[in-house]
Image (cartoon, rainbow, N blue to C red):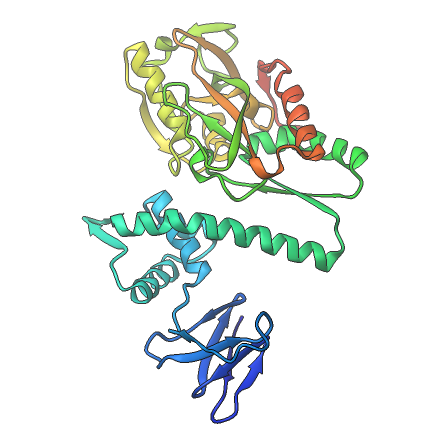
Amino acid sequence: MTTECFLAGDIAADQLGGVEVLGKSLPVSVHYGVAQHDSSLTQILVRDKLTLPNDRSVTPYDGFMLDLNRLRILRAVVSSGSVNETARRLGYTPSTVSQHLHTLEREVGFALISRVGRGIVPTPAAVELASAADEVLQAMTKLTARTRDLRDGATERLTLRSFASAAYTWMPSVARTLRQEFPELTLELAIDVVESAETAGDADIEIHTELPYLAPVSASGYRRHVLCEDEFVMAMPDDHPLAGADRLDLAEFAEDDWVEYDYQDQLATGLASYACAEAGFSPRYVARAQDHVSGLAFVAAGVGITLIPVLTTRWSGFNISYVRIQNPTPYRRIVALSRNAIAAQNATVRVLELLGELAAVPGAVPRTLEVPG
């Protein structure tokens, strides 16, 4: 919601929210609680009467204030490197994201995006601005949550962010135990398709994926906890010639057609490509899907095969066979990141204990998964 209001003060000053405004009328657009001022407006003078009620001096105010939502959009664009991907993540249209970027460029007075071919590249200034905005956005997230707590009367809140398979498999059990042991705790869970720790900063506890052949990404303000190594298995149609085997060399599948199911973040595909290169071949992809559910649907239909984490096999509903892989055995590392500021809180400690217990349970790979009758 955007509201136009006018802070007026001609000869006599008016006071709004404890701030005394001296000067001419100033139109102020308020968007999500953040005032937006036209930078072309003449300078006004304000005096904070709440903190210094007897101080008659005035402080120049230049009418410049960055919009937090645009900064959040910029951070997402810098992280993803794509306007379309940012729009998908944040629920906007690409044209809306572009419009916000253009507006922010006018506000800051320098270029944020450079076009290279059909894509975009954030300028060095945009990268630095997005990095500097992280602390501000995190502070506003905490302030918003605290305001909501004060409004709702909640005494404690814990926010978690996880990728889908970990959320579906582990979090219901975690939530049930927390409800029993911390009845006053409000638990909030967000599911995010982006599994890398590079985007940490939105929740108190975050569950992320690390690829074993890449160095772990440090997240500022967070403590890292390794939960488990999640093995990848080969998913194939029930009528595949190798269905029913216990364990096979990855090279056995060099001539098969493959299905890619993560064309947006490329984490699983990157791991598969790395493992196949170790086995001496490059997978031949014949279909690409957005997520593992649609990817497994392709597999069940006989389109191709794919490597998939054991944790994900528990949430399928298709006629599929799974075979363990060796030489090499692909796997991902699952880690939890806990915010330093709440690391010592009992609820945080308990969540990490529960996640550790659940992750320590060996992953049973079903030989087949059938559609319930």
